[in-house]
Image (cartoon, rainbow, N blue to C red; front, top):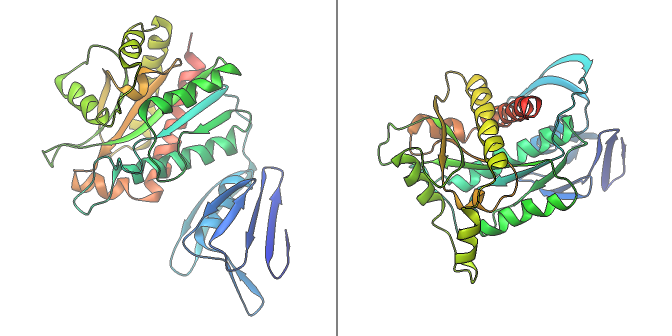
Length: 315
């Protein structure tokens, strides 16, 4: 670590973080990240905001440890053992944070939107994968609160197929219902025939921001020509994530199982792809935990375990 009156650089074999005192931004490798509070100095001591401290934990330290920020202290439980190298039989992962910009998705009673939860989990998923599996190519379809057409998300994903044929697509969402007691998570894969009426309605809700497209009829015809191998692997991916998601979030959110439906964001993908409804924002209890950053980290870790299970067992 080296510092001047203006800029501090913290570097390890895993990566590099740079920040300027008093600035509301920091740089992780070559990516600029906005933060709500700046770093400060007082009586010669450097004070870091939680966002930078957490970025250091997730990206620069090659140890598996637990941590928790409290009002006046930081609790650490460090094992002291480097994170063992684990191979994962996937070359690229596309992480799609559902909705964004003018498309907020659903919301809870306080006006907290689905697009915020999906982006939060997507960023944690990206950071964990980047730390533990640096050899995997990663792509976030959106990194901020911007609107991206559903078709453009799958186009981004398919662009990676030029370099690698072993990719998967994960789309993150939250569910909603007029019944405030409805709850649970569910994992979807693409099918022209929804598994239930509720699955069909969920797909209709998620597909509502489809813009006019000159090749819409052609695209629909092509989307119906499903690859049996891709669909089989998508189903396996959904089952693997559903199993690990349920284990990781035991007693927090119950499972509604693996389902199939015709989601537009999955329709154009040429690789195994799933859509995860992480829970119900319209359920008071689930809304509280879905907004919690520590719980979002649990979701991200559970998804990674599911990906690992899938990768070790796919045909």
